[in-house]
Image 1: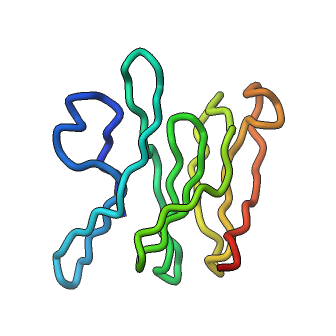
Image 2 (image 1 turned 120 degrees about the horizontal axis):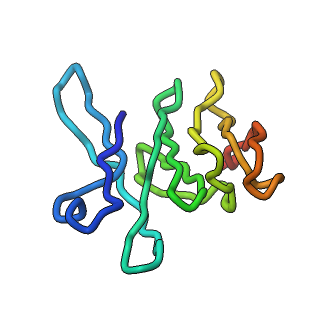
Amino acid sequence: MFLIMGHLPYLREKPTGIAVVDLRTRQMKLLGQVEEDMGNGQQGGFWHCNGSPDGRWAVGDTFKGSIYVINRETGRHTLLTTGHRMRPDHTHPIFSRDSKRVLIQSGLLSGGKTLNLMVVALPEN
């Protein structure tokens, strides 16, 4: 799993977003992108991504500090949480071993001055 960046206009000329390569079949699947208005005519989107150990989910963060989970079977994007200040670093989402939670770094509680670790549970359904 990797990210094809799409935060600059010339990068959006081709498909962007979270992509998965199956090393057995050598096929690539694009799981999608999100659109975020960054102001000044700039579009944001996914920045970092991770896949769940059970292979069911992908997770991605955005330039504005939102965390989305993607069902890899249906392609459905679900906003898990938002408002995580991206200072002094990024959220860098990563799944728990049981694929039920996502660990992130967040400046939400400190107004972006320091980072806290937060655990976000996936929705039951």
